[in-house]
Length: 77
Image 1 (cartoon, rainbow, N blue to C red):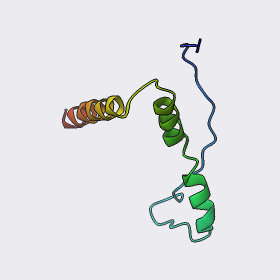
Image 2 (spheres, rainbow, N blue to C red):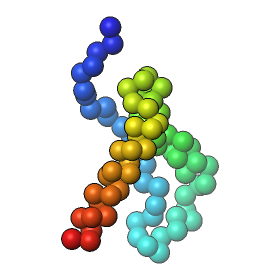
Image 3 (cartoon, rainbow, N blue to C red):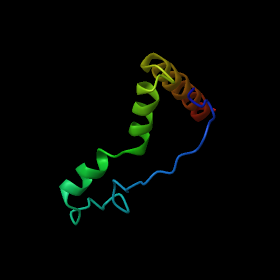
Image 4 (tube, rainbow, N blue to C red):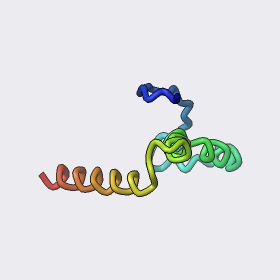
């Protein structure tokens, strides 16, 4: 039986933007950015949850809509 315990996974991340607004990262190889873009921990975790049946795409879309509405309400406050 698959464990239903919640846990926190570690994730390797990569800064996809420069250090400031005017830093266009001309010094970073585009292939390096593509490599890390494919390894986005948020997208990978999302795919894992859907593929393993913990949540559906419809559930995630609903959660995203509800969260966006809460944020927009907070910003207006």
